[in-house]
Image 1 (cartoon, rainbow, N blue to C red):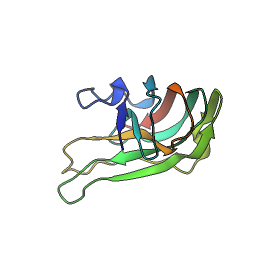
Image 2: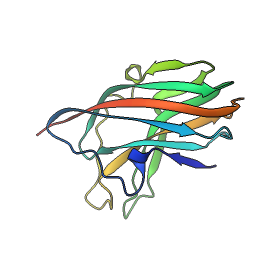
Image 3: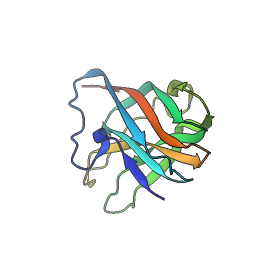
Length: 152
């Protein structure tokens, strides 16, 4: 298993500056043509107390197809090793041509990020996981937008 990371999700990238109300985070990540099942693509970070409202994911496979699911990783605490919900926002969906997926159709929306007081980090990572390696022959471009609400 390998991990690709968008610049918005690196360990040193700050969580996007937030304000009360609706916020959006968006970005692009290009992944290698050698993806295999269970490879992870980290897309962005969502701050503590954010409520996920919706989003879009655009997939431009580099020749062939790529099967992705989109979910989140909850951080490690002193009593929990963290957990991955790998299909909260997009169930396994194969894209063989340029496609845009509406992430709002799945049960994960309305989910509120909740980082406990003993978390080292106060954010969750939104990420895609390769469900099947597919047959892509060149780099794949993933564009995404996640909308979330922060209340006072």
